[in-house]
Structures are given as C-alpha cells and as structure tokens.
Image 1: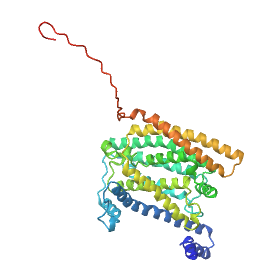
Image 2 (image 1 turned 120 degrees about the horizontal axis):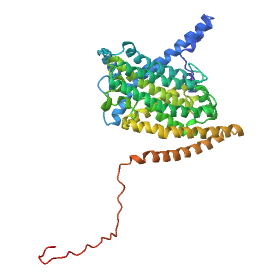
Image 3 (image 1 turned 45 degrees about the vertical axis):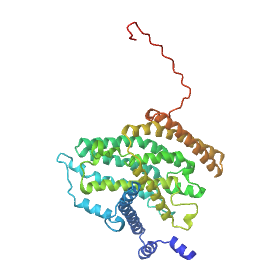
Image 4 (image 1 turned 90 degrees about the horizontal axis):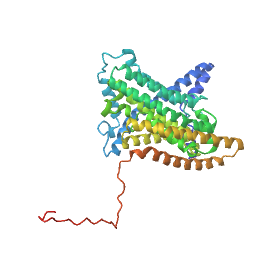
Length: 416
C-alpha cells in the first residue's frame, strides 16, 4: 500500500522528459526553454479547461440554489453545455458600432486575458512547482489587478456608447475604491512573513504549522470583500446592472468577443481563490496531509473550495446600489484596514524584538479574532444606522390612563 501511495505522490509525467533532454543535449538554454514551454502549457491548459468547467459548475450550482435543475439537455447531466455555448458564440455575427474606434475596440477582449493568465505564474503549486518565483510576488499580483481596469475602460470608451462609458467609469471608481483596502490587507501577511515571495509565504505557514488566516482574520475578510468587488460579480456587479445601464462596458460587444469577457470573469475568480489560498490558507500545505496527497491536488482543492464560496455568494445575495458599495469601502473597509496595519505592525515588532517562539502566534490569533468581531460590530452599527427601515418591536402597555373628556353642555334649544 505504501508503495502505491509513494508512486502516486511522486507522479511526475515530465521527469523522464527532462532527463532525456539533459542526456541528448548539453545546452542549458534549450532545457530552460523547453521546461518554460511545458510549464506555460500546463498553466494554460488548467486555465482553459477550468474556464469551460466553471461555466457548467456555476450554472449547475446556482440552479440548485434557486431550486432549478440547471444544464441538463446537452450531454450527460448537461456536461457539454459549455461546448454548446462556445459553438453558439463563435457562430454569432460580431457587430461593431460604425462610430467606434476600430483599433481600441478590438483590443480589450484580448488584453483582459493577459493579467488573468499571468497571475497563475507565481503560484506555488508544490514545493518545487513554481513557474516564476519572484521575490516581489505580492507586488506583482497587485500590479496585474490594476491592468484589467485599463482594458475595461478602453472597451467602454472605444464603443462610443454612453451606457458603455458609464459602465466603464463605474468599474474605475469601484476599482480605485477597493484597491486601497485590498493592498492594505495584503500587507499584513507580508509584514508577518518578512517576504513578498508567494512560495516564501507558503513555506512560513508550513514551517510554523499555522495558517495566516488564524492570525489575520480581519485581512482575510477585507481581501475577500475587496476581491469580490474587483471581480464585478454579484453582489458587486454594478458595472453590468442590466436594469440601469443595459450591460455595462461590454454593451456593444457581441459574439465571441462578449464570450471572452465572460470567460475572463471565471478565470479571475480562480485567480482570486488561488491568492486567498496561498497567502492566508497555507497554499499546497495541509498540516502534514501533503506528505501523503500530492500538494498540487491540495492546492487545486483549496482553489475550488473558495471558488464555491464565490458561486454561493452570487446565487444568494442581491445586487448592491452604487452608493452602498462605495460607502462600504470608504467608510468601513479602509478604516478597518488602517487599524489592522497598525495592530499587525505592533505585533510583529513585539515578536521580533523579544524573539518569541511560535506559541505567540496562537496568542495573536485569539487577540485578532476578538478584535475583528469588536471592530466589525462597531463599524456595522455606525454604517447601517441610517439604513434601518423596519419598525421597532411593539411593546404591550397594560395600564393606560385615558383622560376623561369634559361633559357636553346643552343649550336651551337642545343642541350641544
């Protein structure tokens, strides 16, 4: 049994290929290029197949949440529905407004894919399974998250449509508002681990046998909300509010160009889930279980666990108004993120100066969990006091004193 488990754990279909290339040629440059191409192909395959699978997953799970069957016509259990949708979009006529900017109009469907693809390059899929181990990995991820907004604004402006431009401006306003708390939230794990490398942060959690989500619950909350808003998914899909501005920035896009915008939303959801799993939930590590199960399977499992949470949120929550969404960022998330940075900086300073062992992490975890609930209660109370619409509970009053009315006076004619 141990031999079977060991063979499954050490499964590497390209190991013999690398050895054969090394025996055939002595050129290190050629080996490097081949390994880079193989790694890029693997990431692109995962992203492409994941986008197709996620179309079926989202429609099936949301259908179950809303007491529907979901896809069930094309293929067994509707598994071929994504393929049918892709064929339908490819066959549709691609329309372009006559007054649009031709060059800028055709670029955004391609440009939005670049940040989504490049995000997966810095993920640590396993201990020695990183495509690009950058020492500024967190900064790299934050930079990529800003590029998408430029492509979306380009799509809205080049369409020469007021509704598309309004939707693009909403995206920019929302991106600027939620980038600030997201950056501040990701500073917390960088402060604790002392590195911006994604594999370095995962190794810190694996070495100390603790997830940063336990020590930093407030940054997890802030990043999850900010990333959901950045994805333009329900309940933050104000850029595509059909009842207000038709379809947002991609109103004038049809056919497969629209399909690319839809597909990149699913890919970005996987990327956000991967960032959450890597920086706060141990990445490929799982408290020693990764010694028996291949780490890359654990990492993919965590990605889809958080992706299921995004689907659940999309299928249950209503859309927020633009004023509610902006107020939530500026009046709650940003102050919370600033307070959290101050607290985490003090904790790291105390830990480093006194050279405490890893037991201090559990003390910090307890303190930060209590702090999170206190701060959330305070800010939710302050933020929502002006939005109460429900009547207060009726109170029963047993002794009601009714003043007696004065007796009517009658005149001689009999009229009061």
